[in-house]
Image (tube, rainbow, N blue to C red; front, top):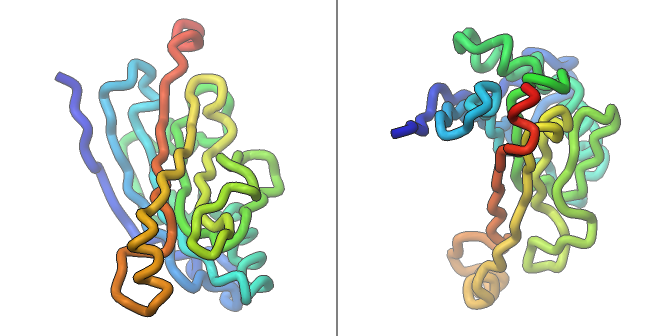
Amino acid sequence: GPKVRIEKKCTLRFDQILDASVKMDYPPFTVLIKDERFTLKNLQWIAVTSVHMPPRTKTRQQAVQTRGFFKNYMRTIRAGLGNTGKDAVLFSATRSKGASPHIVVGDWNHYPRPSDGTWSVCGDEKTITSSGGYGYDYCCYNTSVKDHAKVHQIVWPLPESLKSNYRKGQMAVSDHDILAVTLCERLDRAASY
């Protein structure tokens, strides 16, 4: 049957691409997945990146790092993943036909606002994902896959007992809810590719 496997993984080194004065506090981590269950070849290569931005008390650093992340993502991921054998598909994230999914998910500590129109955000600012009642956790994806795929995020509340333990300073998994991301192929569009 069809296989799903991790092809590569890397820590994205934005400090090698960005101005030396702009560094990511928490370097993003990317996993390149090959999923042969999709019928469209370009959907079979999926780059999933985990991010963690500075806390909400550091709004300037958040803004600089978020802007730098989106602006330099493609160059940085190309450098991080190197030659995958599928470069034309994987690194064509801005083409409308034939783009592979690039999913960026994690603790943004704010609502991310990609400015150039090539990224979409799942959820809205009212989506609460932390015990403090804030929306910190979001999934972003390259807008160019909208014609042939759908990306959704689902927030699963963390049990209140775990959140209250965290607030008391006890060891806990997290004070954030669980964020699940789904990627679905649009079969109604598959025939046109």
